[in-house]
Image (tube, rainbow, N blue to C red):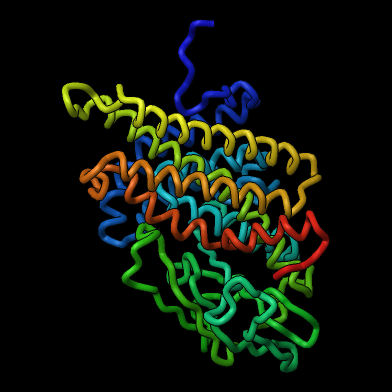
Length: 388
């Protein structure tokens, strides 16, 4: 009864995990501590994604981890959430890479692709030998994917694809892009391969968020796509939206890691920072603020664990994911901002992690559905009225 609680896990969520889930969390946590965190400050400052981490992540089974077969790990949803949490404790950029590869590229190929497509792409992507990106967002579309302009038309046995996509993670390093386009037969997914004539990418520079991640644009000018590269299993917005549900689930877990990193930094800093003759950790003001961070982290942990258990039962609703993405991203960004403030002048230095996480979370709270979008999803569930 007198044992000290884990500051990062006040409700002992760890005791609710299976042995396999604990093993996943601990192995990824060690990887992040030993290989990821030492690289991320320089990667962020240099605006460069540390590609050497791809092979290591693949060796740990982190790419497509929830897929059974095809050289994938076949882990449950809670394990995937824990992977995202530990990776984002290192940096949102690395978690974004794994989320895109797993939830936005490998998931639609596995769910909607042909067996030939699965055999060709999934093992290579699980091994990190092939990189993917996901093309849905367009410059004028943003939160309204139904306003999609990218389109494809049949031309004999092929399709001709035209349009563009914006804010695409992995855009310029991808070997294949899952691109969603309007057709006369509904919204279809196309596997657009690097090097196809008329397919170009351009990296977005001068970002002040997710700097350790590749973000770019995709351009399609009469790109000829063979029928073999069309995902046969879906012809509606259900395809891309189901992918977003998978990605949002991972984000809901991931941001907990960013929040934990900020709280851990504050706990250490306030023990050492002495003002007016005592460590600032000994003051009521600082303790109240850190307690608030812990409250928000604990609530996010409980929500995510429950969400994962529901998902593993096959009972997940997109509204439940929206609630968790909204709640947890808001908590994480508030924690990062307050941690930055507690550190005072030191808070703007990259020597400390809150400013990096704070800037990253400005993107995370926006992508895969803004906070307002998720609030309206929940509002629609409550009232039955679509207020978009």
